[in-house]
Length: 92
Image (tube, rainbow, N blue to C red; front, top):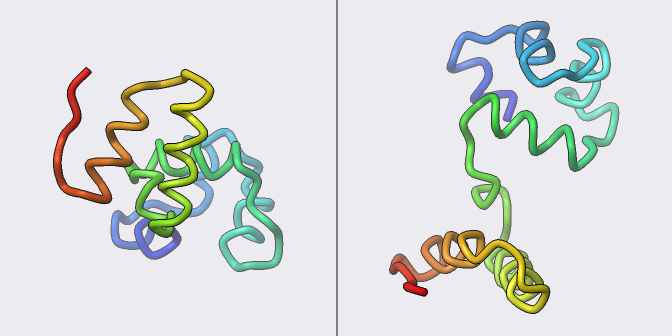
C-alpha cells in the first residue's frame, strides 16, 4: 500500500487527511510499527482506488464469498470475488 502511495506521489500526511486517519498513526502503520485496523484498511483502499480483493488469498476470497452468500448480503460482492477467482461474471 505504501508503494502505491509513493508511486502516486501522495505524502503520508495527505493520505492520512484523505482517509481520515491520524497522520502519525498512519506513518507507524505503514512502517509496520502498528497494526492496521479493518476500517483504516478499507478507507485507505478507497482513497488509493485499490480493490480489497487484491490483498486476499484465494482461500480468503472464497471464505468471504461463502459468508456473504450465506448471510444474504451484497450479491455484487460475491460476483466480484467470483470474477477475481474465475475471470467470469455471474448473473442474478
